[in-house]
Image 1 (cartoon, rainbow, N blue to C red):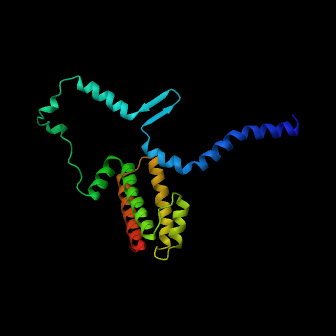
Image 2 (cartoon, rainbow, N blue to C red):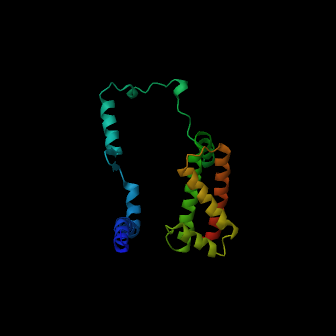
Image 3 (tube, rainbow, N blue to C red):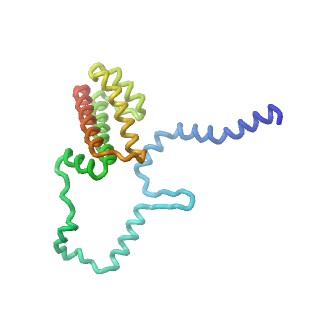
Length: 192
């Protein structure tokens, strides 16, 4: 194989991935706006339409005699637990049941607070974490040491969301406590 053939082979094999990357970068914002509304997922032979699956199950359930219309009292063993009344109760309960879910719920509050922070600044929260970090880093009202705390908490949140790591309830509670402290600092820095 001569040098020109080798170069043509390399360029030919990179053309498709590079083209795909360019399309993804160009369409990143429109695609991220569409993702929350997806009801149907198809990959190769697997196709899932959540709404249709629910309708199919409901049709099956409708074919049997519905005892729930009389609404007799359920036995104590299967009574649903009462819902948490406060956010702290929710985090405590989630920490016991699923520490990862408790961390994700705690981080949702940080994201809502970031929306508030940037709204007070007069613009929409950036999508890029790097841009968010830059804003926090240059804000004289936001303590500089908390910029790295924000980044580290975000990374821990990502680990909780994507790793199969078994976290302890204490980890989730400590994360929630630190996330709350971060939200108060963001509210103070927003100065709204």
